[in-house]
Image 1 (tube, rainbow, N blue to C red):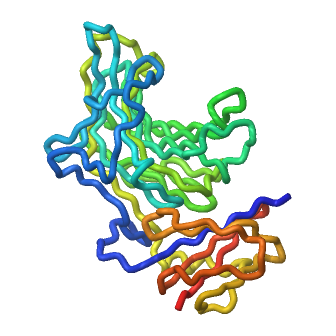
Image 2 (cartoon, helix red, strand yellow):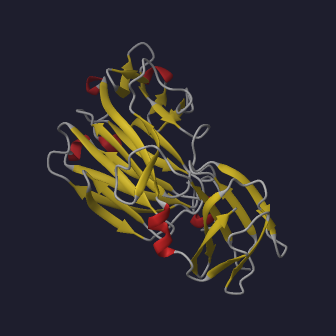
Image 3 (tube, helix red, strand yellow):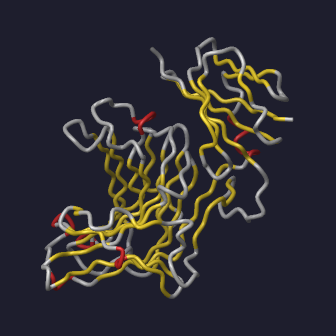
Length: 329
């Protein structure tokens, strides 16, 4: 049976200035407050063992306009500690341009990462990254290879069926000063960037579900010799930005196999996609927040509770992507 999902994105005018052509800024943290903004970030898995170190809430803090993620060693307990924060409880979205400016660590034995994660990443041995999502490592950095940033995709769980695709981007001077790390995630591909230069493009394992942001530093011999002498160490995150496609840009790719009627619509809407039966409707707001799910087993759907404005319906099937522009009166 074909699996089909309809993703509806609400696009409303933003008063934020677009920082990337064709996109509008919809979520940001400049880390200018006195402490971490708990409406945006939460400490992840405090006390959990992560490879050779433990997560600690003490190892992620805001100072001097930066989020500091620390790698430390405690001589009394003979344990290594790292910091990890994420937006799982506060912000999730599907597709967009995700960017962070980061000054990287100076020592080995631990590695920082800026990544996207799916709430369903643990679902394994189904080989369905579209539905269950993908870990998207926008940046991982090993100081023992100081001019290399890694972009990696992980899917199908972390067990026996785990799959991944990895790319190493070589960037001169990466270990000095701040650098921008980004991914452009669309319905068909990921495009990775370092300092606004494209470093990897792939259509493998594209997630079509909400994901959230993570900043972290973890200990392990993969990053070089694990030694107390290599601690403490710090990464400095100047900002994290999330952008979404502007309506005028998305319009260029719509009406390619899907249809909606009446359009403009009032309370009821009919959708069709090349005679393929649509199974589900997922509704999101402009910030990527999931609004509701509608079982699509009838001829028309109720959109009376949606605000007036324009929407883009993206129909995802095993045969490709279909889109249609919708106007709600």
